[in-house]
Amino acid sequence: MARHPLAGWFLLAGLLAASPALALEEGDLALSVTAEVPGGAVPYPREMVLLRIRGTYRAQIALEDLRQPSLPHFGWTQLGRDRWFRTTIQGQEARGFERTVAVFPQGAGRFVVDPFVHRLTLVDGGERRLIEVRSNPLPIEVAAWQGPGGPDAPEPWWLPAEGLTVTDVWEPEPETLKLGEPARRTVTLEARGLTADALPPRPVLRTRGILTFAGPVERQTRITPAGPVARVTYRWDVRPGVPEPITLSAIAIPWFDTRARVMREAEIPARIVGARAAKSTEVAPPPPASPWRALVAGLAAFGLGLSAWGFSRHREALAAPALRALARAARRRDARGFHAALSHAARRDPALAAAWRADPGLAPRLAALDAALFGRRDAPVPDLAGLARDLGRIRPPAATPDGLAPLDGPSPARR
Image 1 (cartoon, rainbow, N blue to C red):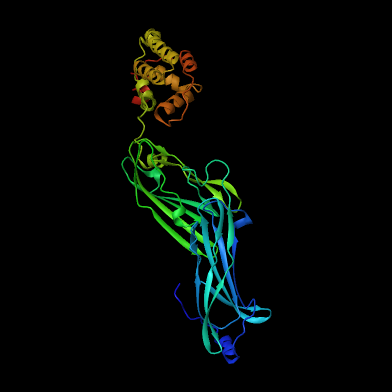
Image 2: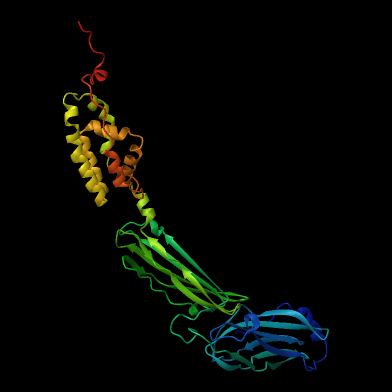
């Protein structure tokens, strides 16, 4: 750290300069280092430990320089700037100093933090003299992980943190994608009590039927008084490679909660790519018109226009083949074959088809058959065997020679 003059202490400096040469007593210059672990537990490797370096000095200080030991068994980062403040020693005004360093032990065992050395240039009787104030060595115990995984396991990634959040953003939403259309997926992990280099590498995002192209990884560490906050951002370009919807599997991220002292699991959520929303955006073609709709509209004109002569003689012969075809399709549970037999019967005998549609017990079931074949995909198919049996019981009313009269207007008066 660069040497710098201390500001804000002119009043104290003036009082000390006006006094005779200082005779320093025990306790006038003191430097201590303490270790803090969230929850007061014995830390595991790579878990954050806060070193609090505190000094109290009853002297006029012109320059200062805190020298930190090498910390060979720890990763470390300083949390903000040094803090100077007013304090007292045995009721006498003094100056307080504080620095916080986050250290991360790299393995299990017992380690010793060597003394910190604070080099102070004091003003003594109008002269300056250099004094070194040392802290005591600080032992730190680091526990070995017990159980599966842990710091030494290659998988899963060891992630000790005070808290972990996962954010998953898609542009556009994956359910709206069509074949070959791209989307950008951005996943952000943020962990408290870690530096960014301790966050895991980019996970593998791969599913058959989906094309993924990985982008760069961004890492950031934000320093706060409570410890570092690490963030890593992963990006992928995602394209559906097949027209069907595909589920992109979830990715589990296990982590160790350093406050609760338990393992937890975060998750990059599963998403469906090219699914329901994509289908809803497409304008579905109208279902093919049921032949029954046109048939019902024209049955009155068509049926009343038939000549009645000889009709009753052929009624049974016309109906029998249609009923046999309906029975065969019902045995096979062939809804489309059943509908084809109905259509054939309607063409051969429109009056019979009109009677079927007019029957209050049959009409809803015939409409349900239309809905199952030409309407909603989830509409159930009615009981074909029962429907064929009930259709065979219906016979149309006998036609009359005057059947065209209602359509052609009143008959001319007979003369």
